Length: 103
Image (cartoon, rainbow, N blue to C red; front, side, top):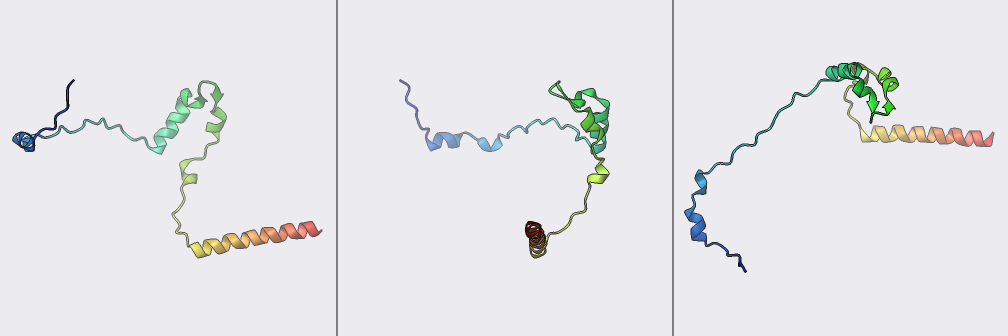
């Protein structure tokens, strides 16, 4: 029947916590692979060409697009311009659908 006791403030103040410093965390830093490293590893190692040891990814890895083709310039979107463009495309598709139904 141990009853928890709340310590007195004077007892806590007696302990000098100001001089105690926490040890810094130890973190192992791994090198981040570049796109080029990942591409060469994908083609070099057969382990990347199968998924769960059963699904063959060789066909997929042969037709992957290179990084240069995937890079795009950043374009700022203007909400009014984007809304107008999408609306006009939808109206055009709707008009084409209506004219096809009438024919």
